[in-house]
Image 1 (tube, rainbow, N blue to C red):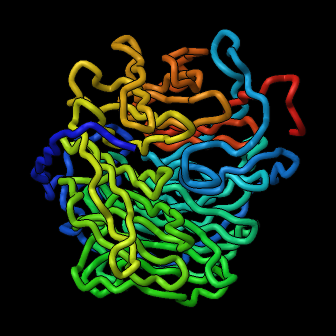
Image 2 (image 1 turned 180 degrees about the horizontal axis):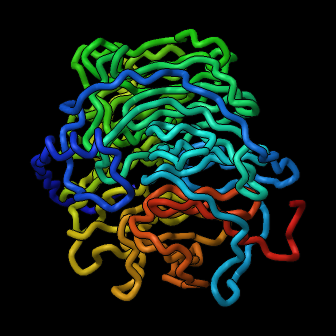
Amino acid sequence: MKFPPAILLVTTLSAASALAASWVWLVSGAGREIARRDPFPVDSLPRFTADLPGVLTRGEGVPAEKLPGSWPRFRGPFGDGVADEDVPLLDRWPAGGPPRRWSVPLGEGYAGPAVHKGRVYVLDYEEGRAEGAVVPARRGDALRCLSLGDGVEIWRRWYHLPMVRSHGISRTVPAVTDRFAVSLGPMGHVLCVDAATGEAKWSRDLVAEFGALIPEWYAAQCPRIDVIGGAEAAVLAPGGDRGVLMLAIDCATGRELWRTPNPKRLQMTHSSIASMDWEGTPTFVYCTTGGVVGVAADDGRLLWEYPGWTIAPAIVPTPVVLEGNRILLTGGYKAGSLLLELRAGDDGKPAPVEIARLDERTFSVEQQTPIAFGDCIYGVLTKGSGPKKEQLVCLSPAGALLWSSGPERLFQLGPQLLAGDKLLLLDDHGTLTMVRHSATGYEELARSKLLDGHECWGPMALAGGLLLVRDLHTLVCLDLRDPAGKKGG
């Protein structure tokens, strides 16, 4: 694969905030009005000790275990944004959009759902409830488990953690297996619970234990669960000043399986950990504040580093693994994109080699991670990408522009996922668009305004033909199934 040469421009954006005003919001318990969205230094705010693992409350929901499908973590079953199921989807939607199965209110944020065994998991932020509610009128993170069938809450694990809005609050997608659910909160609090019951297994505070520096706009790193040494393990990248770049924790026992040393004190970013196989070696790939690293999945040893990819103030998209031991990195703030290839060095170890850089006008994605599948690499360009700003574009594996959606179809910072021959996109304002997966051109199949909110940035999930989407305050379940292919529920 060869990308055309381009110039990487990286700019910095100063963090400006009125901390006094933030403190007033924190102690006053302000409501849901949308606050100014400038970044502020999160580490300058008063530090509260969360009462981990919190309190478990049970609801009346029942798992919809007859409904098929699973979206068990950020970007789906394989972490690539592609649905791994054969449930037929509608080619066109009825007037008014696809049927709405249910909706539930959420605290302000962008945290996306995970789905497994008829359950929906979302790390919400509880902003305070009316008198008489099950949850006390205090603010804090809430890992919620809902029924996929009707959205009724099955259980909730909640801990007190007063916070200030900074582009919303919640951000991350839990990781779920048959046995465990793991969440990472906006201030670095990690929960591992029984996936069915919500009973606590263990919890960690990445700031208190590892000196993690929470990024501006809060932590957005989504946890993952991988099988390591025969055990299901939570894999996290705390970074920080106490010598731990990445670590794996046995979900069943809370015992650390390994730690990756961090002598350079690299810090976490908004990016999440990707995985790849390099010549038979399972590897975790992560963007830190000081460059990209590759870590061996079996024992946590650092395999390689590439310091030439940093973005201020934020790295958000997760590395995209391509065929041929290649990795596509992209970002906003005029960063453009970078293509790396891992090659065997003289010592036989992997060595990252820069293949090409693309400027902001060619390919630059600020927030959502691009989807690479078959002959297409899909991404929505930034506001600074010239004539094609905020358009969906499709690149070939060779880096050539195959098509763009045109100036009449802009998607801003909303999420995407691919299901069969259909690409689903949600724009900032809640309009869902279905596009044919194709290398030959933009073919729109359906388009409907489904949400009334704005900043609809939370990652979507698709399980058994049911699509979960959200805006700042509401999670909605939509039925995209073709009637001829419906099963159960």
